[in-house]
Amino acid sequence: MIRALVVDDSAVLRRLITTVLSSDPGIEVVGTATNGREAIARVDELRPDIVTLDIEMPELDGLGAVEIIHRNHPRLPVIMFSTLTEKGAAATLQALSRGASDYVTKPSGAGSVHESMARVREELVPRIKALTGTRRMVPQAPPPVRRRLAGELARPQVLVIACSTGGPDALCTVLSNLPATFPLPVLVTQHMPPVFSTQLAHRLDRLSPLAVREAADGDAVLPGTVLLAPGDYHLRLARDGVAVRARLDQGEKENFCRPAADPLFRSAAQVYGRSALAVVLTGMGQDGLLGSRAVSEAGGYVITQDQESSVVWGMPGAVAGAGIADEILPLDTVASRLISVATRQARVPLRT
Image 1 (cartoon, rainbow, N blue to C red):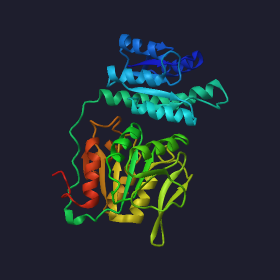
Image 2: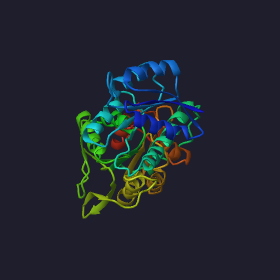
Image 3: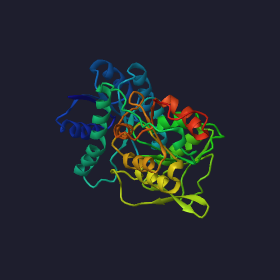
Image 4: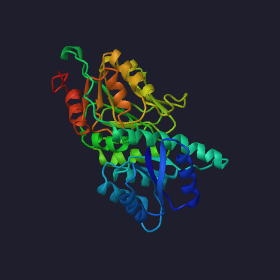
């Protein structure tokens, strides 16, 4: 049974979240709190498996509370509740950088309480189960990586990255450690709604030596530039004469996501073939599996984050488990390895 603590200063939302979670046979709401200070005390008292935490609260807000909770209980997953606004998105990204594991947006515009509950159930319950499942999981020996001769590998011409739960922080770690001279264009799909993706691009641009921006349809794909898929749009690559351009569309969701990683990875395989370099970072679900297979079958190179450093080893674990990964790496080594592979300064494959 997963033991949850619900923290929100709104009695209506506390009751709604508590009702939704209590209706799941695998979740027990062991307590509630109305502000950050009370939340900190309740965590110490109740020792829950997971916390849902509002951002805007009296006395001590969610930003202050999550920092203290994470410092005192670093392995305790915390899911933030945020508004779908520019201010809410910026605050949520701050919370993620301070130790929050994931976030959901508050139900707004729903026509009824029933619809609000359904939306919260759809977004919150899978995250709770994924995050607590990761916490309880005993790390397994990594699956075998592909073995290929260095002569089989072409010099990469593009880097595509996919991530979801835990992704914003993982992206910060990777992109902030790539130099301004990194020779490849970089394209990123992070599962994130509109407004949030804009704020993430701004934050990554401040932290990375590379220029980071939200992709626009028709953008040239150039070295030294990171293009991030906008919320609610798939990002793909397309050849335009000698140039390659970013293409955005609102095609059907894949893996219940838009943007999704698979369309980006498939297009990279089609355009760049064996010169595509793909990275799958932390995230729920299996998005990126089919796209990574396309990259691999085209002769490209696939790297995944390892289980121990992932917030959720769903996406990278699916790729690794399928035997598609050329390397399975801790997060803090991914950037240096990308530099080596992109410039062919190291022998590949790294593992034997």
